Length: 327
View: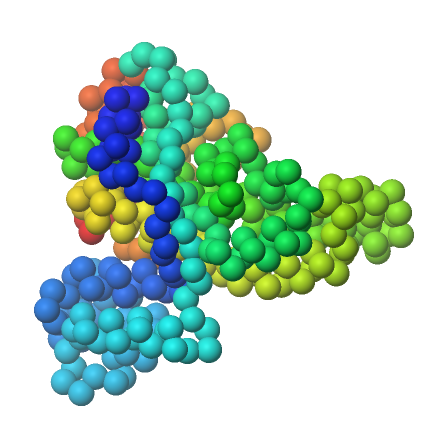
């Protein structure tokens, strides 16, 4: 996106900070609701391209309770409301918008931003909820910066703590979005610090133990363990699908765009010029989009095909594929 395009979207949306919640497999309910209209027979859903979603535990429970064999939006809403009354209610987050990248010219892009074309990406940031931040700031009250956050990445850099984000290249004229990246620093860094501290204790290395006491601003090993058990481990089960769901809801609900592309491992590595030392987890660009029903296509987004900088790249890599989903 050109800087002026990013400016325009941010000004039009005036997004602010928005509460948003998620529970495991919520995306399946969201995708089905968009497909079934006012209602659809279960047998018909099973034969469709979203039939695989009925294998999710939540959908199996919902379908068992249907008397007429027809799934309606009301059935899905009732299940969602029931989650608020259950022992394991949805996890609360807060969404914000940011920007990432730099526009030099249509022929040049700085590789460290890892954008497919010259310019900027719109960034949808998924931040922790209020209760997490209250507990976190109480525990790390002497911290100037959150120890599990990399400020060289597109995080909020304010009082909110960013769980992860989705980088989006948006073309409003053609009605297309390319999901450039889904990433999380916080969970990985917290678990890594805990593992290294555990190793130092096991090896009776007092120097490394003291290092973590200083690095983590004086909290104890027991406090870090409690924080990881309470807030980190539960999110490891669904952080990736939560971010992708938030991105799809944003694209369709806020931007009004239903055609969403997503990089494969190969297309992302080539177009974003990823260094071999910084390759993302393969599952984020293979298993994750397949879980949502994205299909593979040889046809790149139209706005990439018309990009001067990328025409030669696409010609020299004729076998590239992308994932695509029509929401």
